[in-house]
Length: 155
Image (cartoon, rainbow, N blue to C red):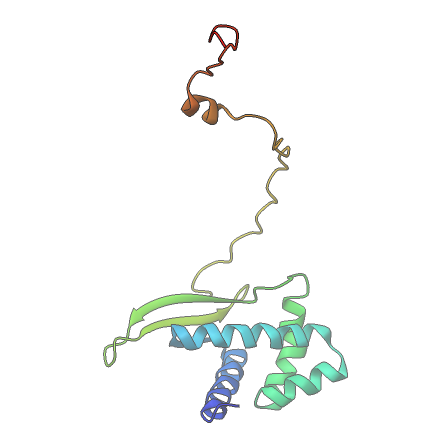
């Protein structure tokens, strides 16, 4: 471990716990990107619903009320969602140090800052291209094909 790793982990634990409790927090963009990864992992543990998952979640987040919310409310809300439980919305530049700030919030909740996008349909299937076929572009740039007749050269 790096010498300064422990304070970063403690800050992540606190921010993930506050995100689960309040469902929206404002922080810097860099911290929000790290919190998003861990929050999605915690929601996935809540969806698993096993005793091992509960112990792993309670070892990371702070507070029994947060663990209870993960395994009841959030697990039920995201039972049909495969991932992407949080969203990051950039808001402003902080005055003191010009750090870019952002809201991180759970999707599909009341009082959202922005509605969740519907699931995108899969793209249509395309016919695979024949690698041996000549393209029109190569014929256009190559110019007319010139063939040399060996009989006309006189050799």
